[in-house]
Length: 246
Image (tube, rainbow, N blue to C red; front, side, top):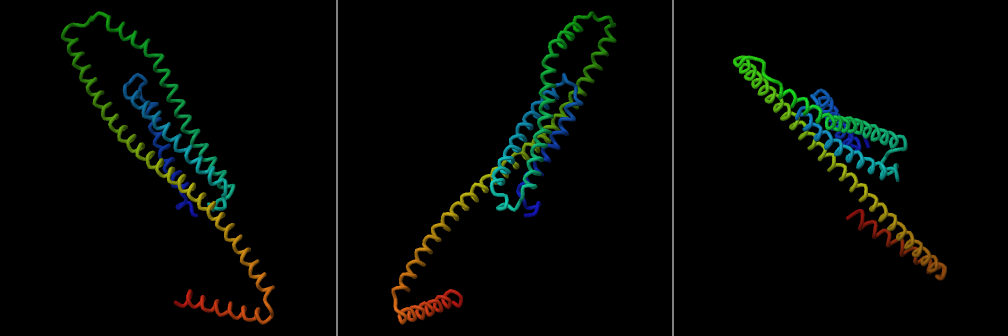
């Protein structure tokens, strides 16, 4: 089976795309200010994506374990199985590193929130030493800046939501493919077991028939044996005509 038709490589490609998008979002998360609402939102999305990808890699590992029971049946060898195991280990490590970094950043933000809020309260208590007209101008400029930043942040959040929606859809597709592969492998296992049982039953019946024929041939006279041989030849010719010429 070529790699283009192998279900493993189809799922691998989907997972790799998800990991690439996850890392891209993570790099964007690193550049965002730690006290912004955008980073809080992106942190939740990153953690959810990590959980989903880790689940998909686990399902792929289960499929590899099933294939390892009889590699020749699936047209692969031990070297290919080891290559697939290494890829899943690498993918799990990449996702784990992102998850650890995001969790550490989240805990750091929580520990620093109290001190930042205290500084903001102190700044709010400072007396206004500017004249009234300058203060009003500053307030207007500040409001404009805040509105501009708010609009920019909303646009970024919208773009990230669209990317995460695509990531979520990709994860769902991978989940469906992984479950299908798992069910197909289980069904093939059951078919093989049923085939083995039928082969054993047929072999036992054939041995029984051979023993019966041998007993009949031993009991029959030379003339009777000749007549039986002629009868069997005629029967074979009739069956051959019925099966292959009609």
